[in-house]
Amino acid sequence: MHLNIRKMLEADIPDVQYVAKKSWNATYQGIIPEDVQNSFLKVAYSDEMLKKRLYQIIFVAEHDEKIIGFINLKETEQPNTYDLSAIYILPDYQGKRIGSRLIAHSIEPIKNFEKIFLEVEKDNINAVNFYRKLGFKIVDEYNDDFDGHILRTLKMTLSKVR
Image (cartoon, rainbow, N blue to C red; front, side, top):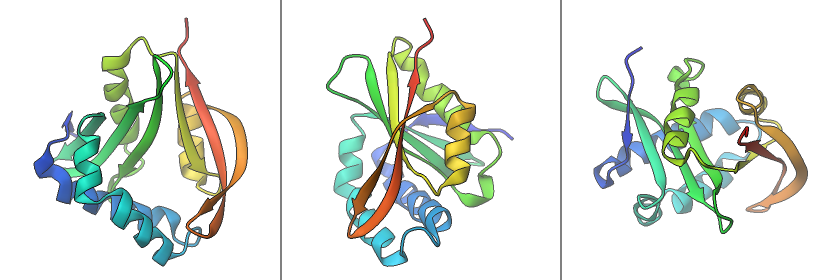
């Protein structure tokens, strides 16, 4: 599959919002109530929030000139340490190595990273297995109050091999 990965532009905001909603609804069906999902998406993926993310590491994946996924990393307060805050692929395109390619592409500009952290819902088995395959390790597990809905969250990290 031909895939174009590029920096997200402000004009991409509606497409990124669409990918976030479709992938969230498919991924968290039966895990997070839909009204809680929609409430979160409305805030986290508002035009204003996505405009702020443009100053972070954020790439989109395009197939046939259509945005089908995106990834967002942001630097933490610790030098060379990043949070992988989002990686979402439209359901029809999952399992086609697009996520792996997005991660590889987004890590390229930060080759000297020491650690990349992420949080993932424990019941999101596909994502947990995906991150494990890429070398992420579980470093913590805790309950997270997500808009009044308690989630079992795993904190995972990828350490740079020296």
